Image (tube, rainbow, N blue to C red; front, side, top):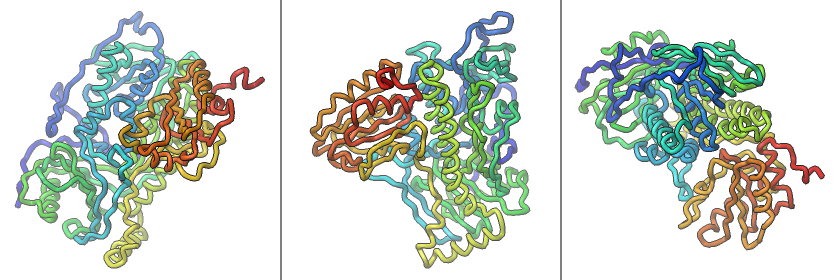
Length: 590
């Protein structure tokens, strides 16, 4: 039964594995069509006051690209009182199906940015998924989720909502502090002059005219087709896969629960893989692999989209439900990165998100890696731009996030090679694993999609010598969530600043507070929390190796910088200064 509703369907323009699909062309002043309950708003460009075509003054930070990574970075800078300008070439939030799955780690970052309630209010939480070989279930995975957690392991939320909720938070910040985040819609970067330690001069244009502006630092968050990257003659290096996937978003009123479903070699699309995800507003995302010899443009023809979706829905028992297409595009996987995320004659050009790297969609590491980029960079750039920390702190951003890329890419590439075999040999291996998994459940682990999880920055130049506590996160690890009973959760005490967690267990440590005050006097954002051993905190302290007392130092991005059983005088201050790339204080040298 064909129950599709014929409507015009926006479609991305072809891209490549490094850059991804290009945004669709929208005719004239027409707004992009609404999707579910989401209505687009067009934001007008404007010109600042100019003197001879130049905006007076200098902006501390200019962010090129107002997608989720650019807006997250701006909010992260705002947490440290750092003003920024965002240059966004489009005049709406993103159009089409892009990122859809937000991890627990990213939600922790979004909480520090102030936008978590909106994400949780609209997003659909999920904990696992099912894989099928032909029509038989062969694997079921569950992501870590226990009573310690306050956030789900994953939510599904379309990128236009993600950007809108970050924009809403920007508007709230600007209402409280006008001009804190100056987002300039419909404004395209056309060139820039690198002036060394003096910063940069950026040349921009919009529908009202062209002008130049000065920036102390420029961060390229302008996506896979990055103008900044291309202007510097830089290329992403790594692996580009030949496999192609068609992405089709449909509106379908299905009651199936939120999970990730994958069909390998299904009878209705033999020799291929099909994925299906539920999103808010009854929008369902279907990804299916094009077989060798199939033409991309032909696959995106409306009649072929309609025929495939109808065949798929009938096969899974939902052919009787009415549906309509809302988006189509083609995707090619790639795992590629810049060799450094810091460039320019004085290192004042930085890269983040898809401008810095490309990640396969399998395991949902794309935007989630971008959130981590912004989280790692914001506090470091704020400290350097304010003159508190040395510029070497920004070198740690590049080294840590490139190391994280390689960790993420290793898992993503294994998933990609299983989902979209790059050769006949891989194809035969997958077919053997799938067929054997029907009777040998242990082999089914090869089907595990390896969902994203927090990456450790170990080793890191920002970490200090620590004590062995037996259990708990090591230096470089993200602090693990812990339930504190009626006192909430441990992450409630972790803000966008250095955090010292003192687990007393009956032991007084007055020296910690004094060293925190000294760090604050040097311009560092730092807070101290004490947690005593009680019935409510026992399990948390046990998980952190702190039943006998301990002190943890966390960076502003929530990663552990050091931990001790009982730090000697001065050790905590030294570790804070090391994590911020500060020179030792005079009294420490003496």
